[in-house]
Length: 196
Image 1 (cartoon, rainbow, N blue to C red):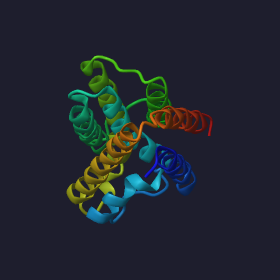
Image 2 (cartoon, rainbow, N blue to C red; image 1 turned 45 degrees about the horizontal axis):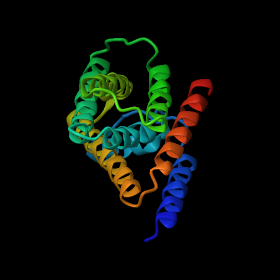
Image 3 (cartoon, one colour; image 1 turned 60 degrees about the vertical axis):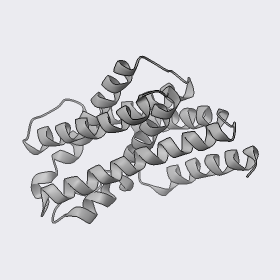
């Protein structure tokens, strides 16, 4: 497959994903939910899809141990945030923080920012806490909070892996500019989420 064709597929896939989902994942609660509802929930909002895929893309851009450490740090922090939300511990500006995570990750990818590993881990952990909190607040209503949470974490991991795969494909076919363009598109989506 030629580099141009790969670039076109990546760009079309990004724009198709942006148009396929509602602006926010928090359009329904977890009432009566179990494993499969948890598995599908991260896919129901562009804010979560973009953040979770972007974590994988950014990890690939940073390289080194970030390949696995960022995609592990995010779900661990997300679980912690989910527990806080489930216990009713309030965090200020959760939805704003989620939109900011989309914007920030888009900028980090767009500018190919490669910080020290500890900084990258800390950033995605903060993002993970807020994403987890948003859904943890819904956990008490779930039929099975444990299985709902498990499905949610597995879907998150799959989206991280998708981001890693997209970045690897772009690098292999020498179309890294697509990642910069994707970063720009993700940051624009973050701005839209902030003002929506």
